[in-house]
Image (cartoon, rainbow, N blue to C red; front, side, top):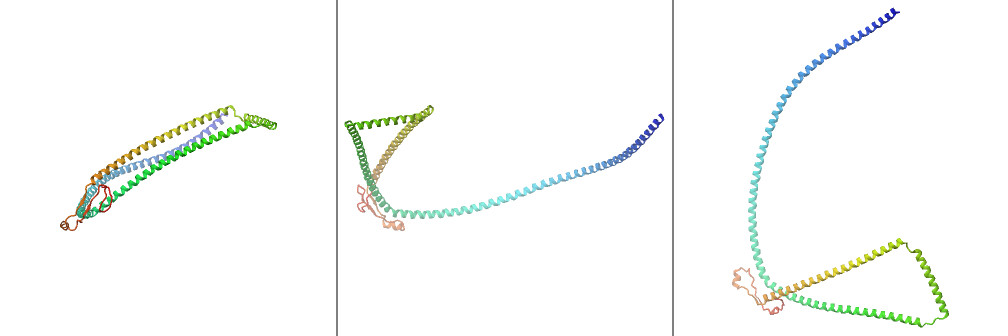
Length: 351
């Protein structure tokens, strides 16, 4: 039994040894493969290190070249900027010279234009002076006519104002008569109504009642009493509750207060309108008085200034010939009366 067990154990141990040997062989092959791979990786790392050193040297050379190129570009930019500034200065100098030339030409043209304008102004003033001399008599005559028309308009305005006052007085008298007639009519109607009532009452007092009339009156009174009772019941049935009565009282009080406020507002508006109207009328009266005083003062001043006789004599014929015909000889002799009427031309005016 033991021999069989040992034999079995030996067989198992041998099998395990074979398995271990196979495993060791496999591991040895893997180790050889890994060693070869490691050696190859080491060679590649050395090659990469050499390439990196080469690339670093090339990069340093490139950086130096780029720096030199940047310096060259900065130098070229500075040269270009200086050349552009020189060109800009030349353009500015050329433009300034052209502007100075144009300014000189324009100044010369302006001087010529001013000279021509001065000559034209002198000629225009000469023509205006001649026209003023020609229009002097016409203006004087027109002013006298205007004064006459103004006096006529003032007289018409005075007459219109008097007529307006008369019409206003007539209107006030008519309104007073109308109010008096209305009051008399109201008193007459009131007296007539009172008289009719007295006559009705007297006729009723003197009227005699028979038995049939009394029975009919009693029946009518009974019917009236029944109607009053029925109406009172209906009113009691349709009468509002206490809350409704309170609400109605509150509404009535609010309505009365609103009516009072509206009345106060209407009174204030009426008083305000009356005040403004009074102020406006007083101001208008004041300015009308000032305007009248101003017109009277101007009237007196113009009359005092224009009262002396006006004699506009023409120049001699020799002096007219010396002026080259530019002066128009005019002879105007106006003898004005104290009332401002031209005795020769018949034109009235305030002088």
